[in-house]
Each structure stands twice: as C-alpha cells, then as structure tokens.
Image (tube, rainbow, N blue to C red; front, side, top):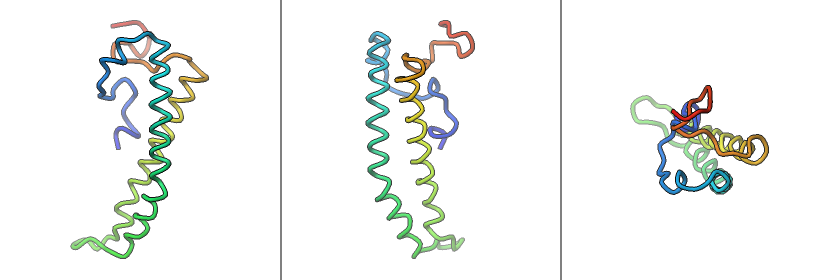
Length: 114
C-alpha cells in the first residue's frame, strides 16, 4: 500500500542502471512507456479482480467471521490508486514537465544534485 499511497517517486526502489545511464529525453520516454504498460495491465486485470472479490462474499474468515470480499476489497483500492498514480506520472511526463520525475540524487526543494 505504501507504493500506491505513501512512497514518493524518488523513494521507490527500482533497478535503474539503464534508466540512469541515458539522457533525460530517453528517460522521459521510459517513464511514458512504463506508465502506459502499467496502466494498461492494471486496467485489464481490474474486471477479473472485481469478479473474484465479489465472488468471495460466499466465504468468511475462520475466527473473525469477516467476509472475504471485505478483506480482499483493499486490492481494488490499491489497483485504482496505482492507476491514478501512473496517470499522474504520465501527465507530468507528457504535459507538465517534459522531464522525468526527480531521482534520488536530486534535492526535492532546490532540484540540485546532492
């Protein structure tokens, strides 16, 4: 849930040897491609996830007697949050900044390298 709601873009852990070694314009292309792929994958999986979560109303947890659809519904919230986050990143990369999001090497306030 931290990936969807709390972690800033520069706090995410990722394998970025390739990303960090290319020029800023290509980094922006990477951000756009990644955002499009993740948005597509999560949106394609959403109907099946919704069907599974709503199907699980027939079972409850053993001890607390909480219906599983209530327990699994947090995944639907996670999917929606991730899609919104990557829509925001896509919009920033395409329209607003035309540069990739800040990396760990940049100071958040000044934008200068640390």
